[in-house]
Amino acid sequence: MEKWEQSLKDCVTSPEELAGLFRVDTGDCATVSRRYPMRITRYYLGLVQKPGDAIWRQCVPQTEELADFSQSPDPLDEERLSPVPGLIHRYPDRVVWIASASCPVYCRFCMRKRGVGCAAMAPAAPEAALAYIEAHPEIRDVILSGGDPLMLHDDQLDALLSSIRQIPHVEIVRIGTRVPVTFPERVTARLARMLKKHHPLFINTHFNHPDEITPQSAKACATLSDAGIPLGNQCVLLKGVNDDPQVMRRLMLKLLSIRVRPYYIHQMDLVKGTAHFRTPVTSGIRILNALRGHCSGLAQPHYVIDLPGGKGKVEIPSGKVRRDGATLYLTNYLGEEIAYEDLG
Ligand code: SF4
Image (tube, rainbow, N blue to C red):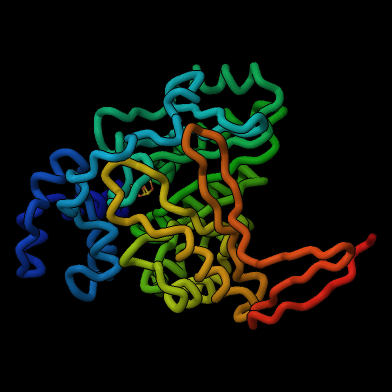
């Protein structure tokens, strides 16, 4: 058994233990965790500076999760868009493959909290998923997601990637993972050597707060980058975690310092059990405006809403544009409106 597998057995899963460690009343944590499971790695829990802070809010069950009846467990209609269980085909040229149903930390804001960590969600059966992709030559991009695909053992993941790579029309493979953030010790040299065989391979990480960037998570990202894997980051705008322009600015700049390119800021999906994390769209626009011009273009993510009903992502623009005949009036990062002569 590898060291990371041993550490995984030592995660905090008991609300009583959590209460004892922080000497706090964790309220309805036990009731909530019976519906939406709790698991927190010792590493990630070690990032909590005090109960209620940004790290705590992301991983400790909260009463509000059970009080949210207004929203759908699956607002993006992923189950309807699954031609075979565990394979989501929403856009013509790409599919999402649920490679694992478990994660080192069960994030309280998860868009798949309807099933992640529960019997309700199962990984895609490889034979059926591969047969579907083989039968659809328009699929050129396979995104391994979950749960967390890096919860698979190296050999399992190697076998899965090898089978996908045997399909000639699949051009790229992407992996979405929060492992570098919540469980960086899982990113071993052995894992990186194996992944390197399957290029072109891209990894999207999921850092939400600058305090998640530590020497350990930086080392995990460096191990992946050194294997030639381009790293991007998708974060979610979360009330009480990162809905603050200064926090987001620090996050974006720190990501660049560990060779991770900011890619998306997601508006929270309308997922049942997560309403307490939602922010108005104006918050996201305010954050984008605070980033524009104040930090390099490399640090500018796209701010997107994933439309309900599986209708796809739409980018929310931040800059103001007004037209008068052939003249465009564009507002810059200082709030000045500047005229630009367009082609008539
Ligand atoms: S790691 Fe990703 S899939 Fe797993 S609980 Fe967190 S957000 Fe959900």
